[in-house]
Image (cartoon, rainbow, N blue to C red; front, side, top):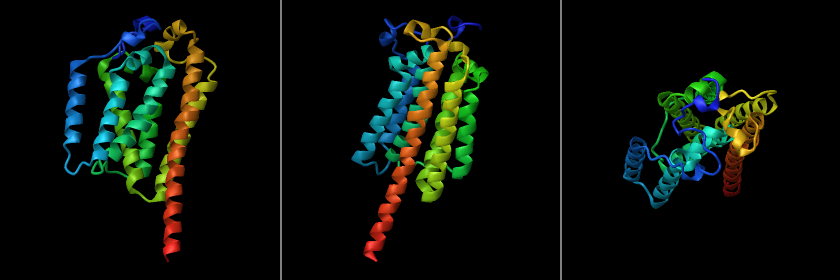
Length: 246
């Protein structure tokens, strides 16, 4: 497969600006699985009103990622794919963790941090990325492995000590920022599925890739930094309260 027209990603061929808002994905199998998952989570024992609100929010995010026209946009723009991967790994997992207090992924924080970094980088190897966009099975393998490894990280962050949680978040921030920097400063476009799609959007393939790198580098890494700072602030607040109480 030598050009963007030859790739057949799960979300369909790369859309032009005039059509992409009409490119909804009504895959019945996907919709059934999403609906079944939402019903199961909403019926979990002890779910509070806040938990249900978070579950609905997580469901809305999943619809944005895989059903809305944004799914099709990721076939055209690698920068849209970068946003997709960030939402999949840095927004959806903490939402699910907050919505499902009993959700637990076993494993050490360091192990999950390293595993997630390995999986994230592996899928951004051009050949692996190209395979994911040429097969539905490979596409869902990519999505599932990214999501599950991210759930492992966020689950560990929730249950380990503050220092270990901050280390896991900062480690993920560093690997995300490093990958973003490499993509930003690469001298050529690396991803064959996006050699053509960006052009009709007014971007060269290299500009699209650089934008994707900047998204990973700044807002992407920033999410993990913000989470680490929030944990640190919460820890300081608890220590201050304990000191005042003592």
